[in-house]
Length: 335
Image 1 (tube, one colour):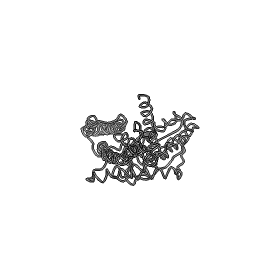
Image 2: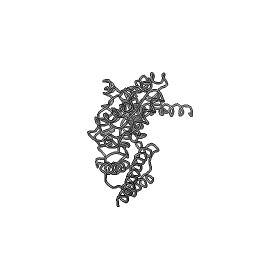
Image 3: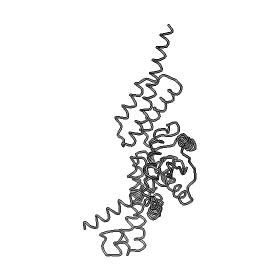
Image 4: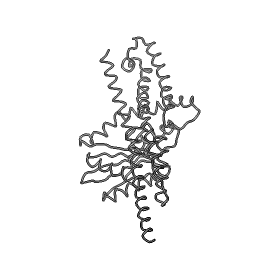
């Protein structure tokens, strides 16, 4: 039945897209290496709830479980089997996250698939309805959404919020900070709870909106602990994105979730500290980071985020070189 497969595939992609949008809206960017896995967990969890309905009401099985024989006993057994196994699959996927902090409790994490599936399933069901409603006004206005990944360092959320406001003020862009409504906040906290346990690490539970006006057009910035997103007219959105991307410094945040990249960012931060303190920085130390970046498999966005920081280091290095040469010439003249 090729048409049935096409419909199922299209519906699965739609639900996966909706869950990705929900994750982005209520939590922020998921690590690039794990995004598809989290979306798959959400999709399976949503399906798991529908299978549960077919356990209670076998007549619904034809809708939720294709190709099942028209036999109530077989339908119920099949539904129960899927109902039991699917959360274990969700739990197993959670153990395969690239950015999960390691632990030795594999069985426990697999069994955690049951609360994961229940929570993500309910959240996905709710958001399948809510997300399109939230997005309709922006869609009708032809607004565009853009974002870039960050990871705010522990205890530095308010500092990053102040940094963003300072950058906006520097460009004469008025900003107004406000908190999300109760519904969005509840979804955010719920998803944060699940993702904390999936990644086995503490995640910041802070989220603020910053409303700005650029050239008479309103843009809304959302600051998550893991993402900065902007929505509004295309030109103004990308102006804000490019400005923040260029001027935000790594003192209080990373520009990636992935651990291997954060190691490089720590080294970049240390070299920047040396520049700020007037210490000598060699070109070899910058080249070494560039070589590591070249040999690390990254998405284009992550590569650009790190390379942009290296460009800044190179700029500081040549400034240092210029001032040293100027100082040497001045000393020679005095001699």
